[in-house]
Length: 338
Ligand code: NAD
Ligand code: DAU
Image (cartoon, helix red, strand yellow):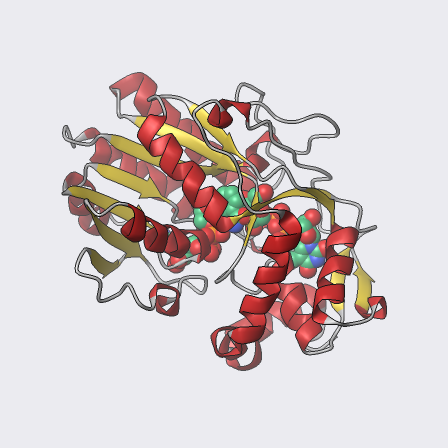
């Protein structure tokens, strides 16, 4: 059995990864370590909480007394845990430094003391390259993060690399583009706009709506991580992108069409400060190891809309009843309903 530690496994990508990994690797015994912040939800692990090869531990990656022993028992660490929402980092960056940078340091220190560790996967992001006016970012490109979230992720990304270069901790770093799919917290554009559209309330589009993201279906991300874990080389960085460049306004129109709502629901609002115009990834390095994204964007988006329609019991308690989310929405958008 391979002992695997997944941090942040109750979040969006982490929970999809835990489910995928239990199904794909019968020889993996997975421990999920998650603090259960506002974004971490045990419902995301429904069906695998009782799995004989899965254990859940509630705890903070930045607490060495909890995270240290778990790392030291592992052959593989897949480190997803982070504060992840750019808008929240702009409002309040403190937690991003504590979790994304210091938390990664705590895990790496423990990894340094774990001779049996075969791989430490630092889940980074395409945001570390900053805004890319044209072309596609390669792994060797300069990092130019421009908001507190991406700066904290860039810090963690390079810290992880330094533990490979200095102490030969077997680190690989993956930089994925914007993920979408089931169980994404309804603060990010796709789930926010789908659920607003279902409720027939405006969708707040930042600025001129011409910012561009490269959309990656979450399961394609999981498969890409698997390839990087199995075939990647220590000390290397791997981009994981979907190859689906879409302007926000076009994404919004597609969502409204899929939900069956008029474009008049689009509400232009003030732009995000420091809003990165465009991200785009060159994924030829991971593709050379045998990975390809499999889910076409139209198909993945339609499936995602269907998932949110069929799982109102997952998101309504957050959007309609959670006072913390309602306060966040009010602070961010000025009104809870428009
Ligand atoms: P998410 O916000 O849905 O989940 C984050 C999880 O981390 C939650 O379960 C939360 O409870 C947990 N967590 C937060 N702080 C913690 C702490 N101190 N200790 C333990 N657990 C803690 O995030 P996500 O979208 O699933 O992103 C997962 C990872 O992937 C992050 O590292 C993020 O930077 C990276 N990433 C995300 C995307 C994307 O589009 N969502 C793209 C590229 C990279
Ligand atoms: O690129 C990878 C990153 O993608 C990850 O590292 C982050 O963790 C993840 O949150 C995501 O960051 P973005 O800022 O790109 O995602 P978000 O869904 O917040 O925004 C996507 C685009 O939509 C962005 O251009 C801002 C815009 N937007 C977003 C929201 C929430 C709006 O126009 N209106 C909104 O209400």
